[in-house]
Amino acid sequence: MGTAVRVRHLRATPGGGRVRVSAEPAPGTSGGRLTFLVRAVDGSGAPVAEGETGRAVVDREKFLAG
Image (cartoon, rainbow, N blue to C red; front, side, top):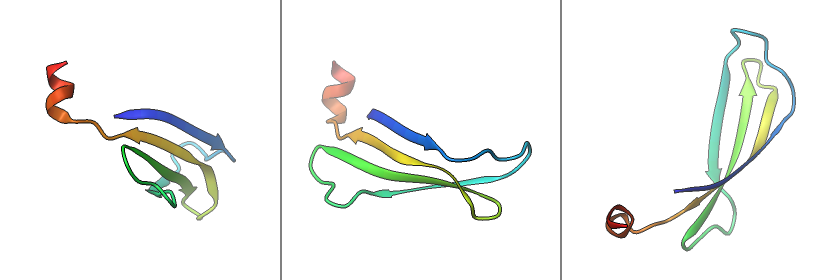
């Protein structure tokens, strides 16, 4: 379940341009809360955004019952 999104916009991409987004676990992430580092680059490989997103690990049965 999502808990937070923090993204910093670095530069514009022209209309119709392609953007590739990647995410990887942040160092030291463990337990019931996960943090992922996110990065977006345009077709030339230039960064257009970067940041992090937080996720919480929940028990599916309890979540659906509640």
